[in-house]
Length: 105
Image (cartoon, rainbow, N blue to C red; front, side, top):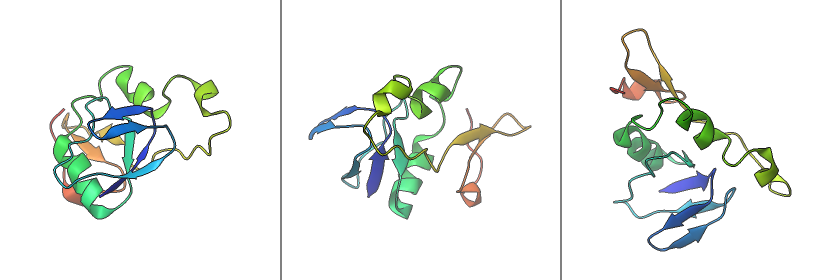
């Protein structure tokens, strides 16, 4: 499964710089602080399964805009395609993958 790093990541197999696309093993659980955007359907499913628990308060913006815009100088920044958003029930849907259903916060 493939992800785009939207923050610098230190993963068990090494360092991934923000902006890089990387392949993760099938048992990979996306980081609790966000920092990744899924690329393929397997990655979207893993991201959804991990849930939106990290999406409270400033964490949303930190995951999407890590370290401020200066971090992205010289990097081809692509905003994340998938983002959790809250619905009236208090649960969350994953934009771009609403068919997977709601998840508790």
